[in-house]
Image (cartoon, rainbow, N blue to C red):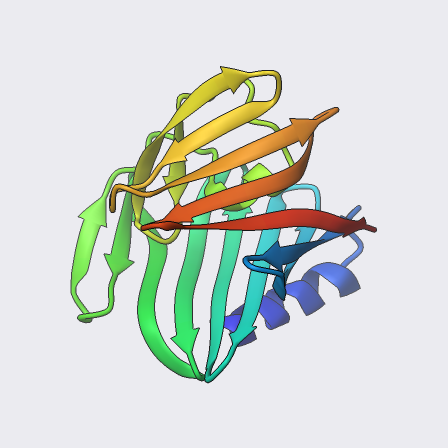
Amino acid sequence: MIKRFAILLAIVCSSTYNSSGQQLEYDIIWLGKIGKLHISKIVDDESLFIETNSEVKIPFYKFNWITSTMVKNGKLQSSTYQQLLNDKKREFTEINYAADNLWQVLDNDGQKDPINIKNHFYVSRLYFEEPVNEKYIFSERFGEPLELLNNGNGHYKLLLPDNNFCEYFYENGICKIVKAKNGNRTIKMVLAEET
């Protein structure tokens, strides 16, 4: 998964195509700073590559959430999502384009299900682009479109299937703050750097 992304990244960087990149870093805060979210985006003439890597450390636990997404000509080609706890896999989703608007989703249980993706705005894009006219955002983690509420003034609320939600706050089209509600906890991610 990550190896595949690294190979694609190397190909894009060494090709003669016009490519550009952007990196974002967010501080993760819950009862103080507990980690970092690193996001990389590479764009060339036809393809978009986005990789996210969150690392959170709290006493006795280390969590990682890793997403790698490749889009070509506006269409998802592949995506992987994994959640690790103390370096052991807890959650996993892999999505691959099959043909004729069908994608295969491989989940934790190794079960493959075909899906049809009608929305081409993905969660990983939310960090780089304000979803001004979007009503649904496709989740690489859940393998399905999620409802997006526009609360006005650059504030959006993404409803998750597990009855939780994420809120995204934009200034001048840039995502400055993300609040993730998980049960009775709210974890905040604040943009630290933009390069």
